[in-house]
Length: 488
Figure: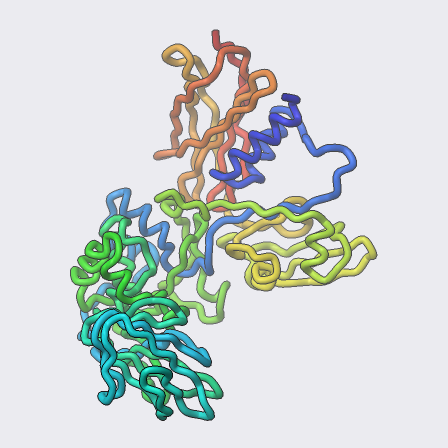
């Protein structure tokens, strides 16, 4: 294998665990660039996180719980200054499942329709929009102004969305030239039992934190002023992923139900008012200020370091996406992109409202915000940098500092690496790369209380080893030093 090939292999493998930019930079210290001559220019976006990044990171909650934090500590981390309070739960939530011109219902048990017709188990009923009314198919074959199905505790499959529901009652009615399916007469507890926002296999304290956040959102919608002027309170896609029966009775569903019951009535409040308990899948290591993503600056939704987001095998904590100059231009309605300039990111490293300007081979320019680029380029979040882009820094937090104090052979063929690494924005990770002939081996360790110490098996031969501290939250590398060792 050539040196160029080995560098590419190492870069691709390690990029799954950390930002590709950090991998590339440390490789350059070892061997220099390996881009084939004459290759088309490409642009690499190095990012972290999945979703808007405001409030609780679900993976971060999992990581904190795995590290021993209880649900109140998790909530205090993500909603600073908010309190856990107890309220009387709603008993009449209305949850919009979908809007569609046609729904197909499949019964899991005896089901009453409009109190007039009874369908046995394993029956199928098609409901279609017809001139401002509903056409109920075989075996009913009737046109009605609306439809209400009583499940009596047995699961009723509703397609779309293709999920089964067994709590509350199903209402289907006309709206603006189509139909809408709504679960009505649903208690907050019943809604939460079917909330498919977090894997039931995750630590119980993370599940409890999710239950409190979900209950807070539901209670906010259930108690808002003028709620009955709307057809529904919650959207099953936008206000929490409500999937019903299969969450409650699926794999490890009892663990989720236990978390819901253990936090019965508990919500987040700030100043005696229900808080905006928003959350997303992954923060990428740093949460966002509410006003940097949306508009209002809420005192309990502040940007802060979130190192636990890397836990629970979070594959979205760091990600990288590359585009050729031609493909990038096509996605932006331009010719091949030859230059990119951008303003500084917000304090969390995000570009939601930041302008990024692209120049193509013909000299044409177009500008987009980070939020627009996320949509156009299919990015997981707005917390990204563009390798090679000019202009403002993508992160304005302090860089890490540290030292390399020791690299030596330990217990035969294990390489011991030790030193200091700290960052005012959160404990940094440390990237180690060792070059042995044409082979590059890389691994990552975590700084704890300002120090790192790790051992890793290496093959015999002469090794050039470099160590870099990865900035929190950008993971830009800061070289701490390089040394040579011989392993016999």
